[in-house]
Image (cartoon, one colour):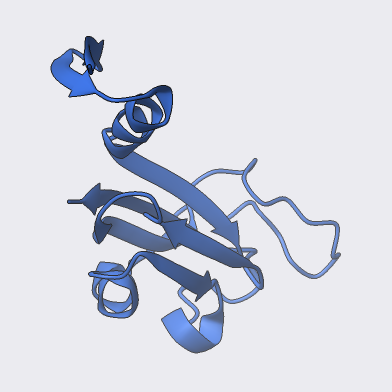
Length: 126
């Protein structure tokens, strides 16, 4: 007999603890992440649903994210932002997992000489 439990405020009947954990993980909401220029990052909805990109920006809006010690790159230009939601959405929407390379080749170079990063917000749709 399944016992009744409340998972994230939703009453559900679960057969075992694994199902309760899966239901809890499936209702996690909005995800956000940063990928430093030159790096790779993974957007993932492996347990539940598929990716839907809400917003993606490439550039720099602060001095502390993705700091590097390469002398000819700087972090002082914090007015460098390019909306790239359409590019990331095209590559990732509808997939369970998506690897993105934060690079000028993919997104262009909105501020030459400045260390950039990709800032992505997405959700997993069931």
